[in-house]
Each structure stands twice: as C-alpha cells, then as structure tokens.
Length: 263
Image (cartoon, rainbow, N blue to C red; front, side, top):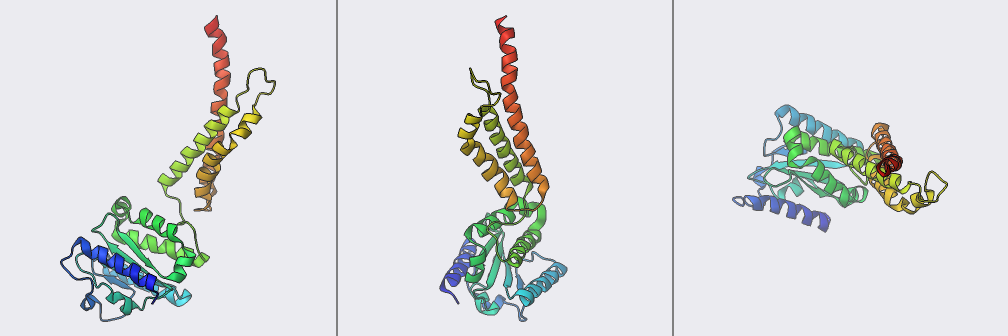
C-alpha cells in the first residue's frame, strides 16, 4: 500500500469523522459481510440504484483492472478498515460521499490513476459535481454517479487533464470572455487620424496578446478541451466576431455624429 495513498485516505476519513466525532475513525464492524464495491451507510441510493452501480463498477474492474469504490457515510464511518476490505492499491479510487461538509465528494486516488488524472482534474471534479447546487438539482446519487462516469470516460481515453463536459454556466463565461476579446480587437481596429487604411492593423497586432488571451485561451480553450461539440465553439466565434464588428462600427457612428454636433 503506497504511503501517500494511505495518508490521503486517513486524512479524508478523519476530517469526515471530525465533523461529528461521536464515533471513532475505525469501525470494521460497519463493513458488509459480502464483497461489494459500494458501501452505502448514508442510504444515498435506492436498492435498485445501488445494485446497478455495483454491476457497473464490477464491469469496469473486470474490463480494465481499475478499482472504483464508493463509500457513503454520515454519522458513522468504517474508517481505515475499508483499505483492507477493498484491498485498495495504486489502481484504486475510493470516492467518499459525506453530506456534512460544504462539498459532498472526496477522493482518495491511487498513484497509477493519479498519473493519468492530475491534481487539478480531481479539484474540478469535486467542485463541479459535489457542490451544493449540483447535488440539489441532481441528488446525492446523481452527483456520485456523474462523477464516476467522468472518471470512467477519462480512464477509457487513457487520461484527461480536465473533466469532460461543458456546464452551461462555464460556457456562458467563455462566451462573455470571447465577446470581451472581440470588443478589444474592434476598438484596436479603429482607423487613426491621417491614416488611409480603414483598419488599423498595426494596433490590432499590438493588442493581439490581450484579445488573443481573452478569445483563444479563455474563450475557446476551455470549450475545445472539454467537448467535441462544435455548437459552443461556433457561438463563441460568432460572439467574438459580432463584438469586434460592433466595437469597430462605433467609430463610424461617432464620425457621423461629429459633423452634426458641430453644425
């Protein structure tokens, strides 16, 4: 058993138990008699849901060798006893669901899996599926199943740097940043006094690091890295283009209004 994995599992379970310290952090008597990848002490699943999840995790292990395990707890936890019960190793993931904290989900990740799915992946996975709003909309069982589905997808791909899928609120943010980049590019393109060119390409290029970061890095980057759907990409490109044209046309409107005001 890797030392880092044991320490991580100990810390997660200890912190979960610290919220309600009426019980110890090591209660092997809470473990089921039969072998199972799901220990549902908090009753977050119906019997049908639990059985379906057990079959899914067993299939994943049989097909790929990755051991995905789920422990739900509330006021009691088996603690480190799950380590021996499940035989967790470098190819194991223990998902610990505890609704007493600010986030439902915690993960203890084996070294081999951690090499494929880095630290920022697990942070994003926790914040996306374990937050109170997602749990409220999808239920505790849905949050757990969706988080596991994301892990299974990435393991099948041979690893991920970010969590697959693009939440609506994240896409809206990328669209806004794309439009901000377009506004910067559009204002930079305004023709300068005594210039014969209708577009100030020099200024557009000088400000390219600014609008490029907004549009390419923060506008298109998160979308392309999380989904193969071209619809949000197309919308962001149109948002950038429309904002750039709108910002550029403000120069023409200002020129038309200036003679009127002088007259």
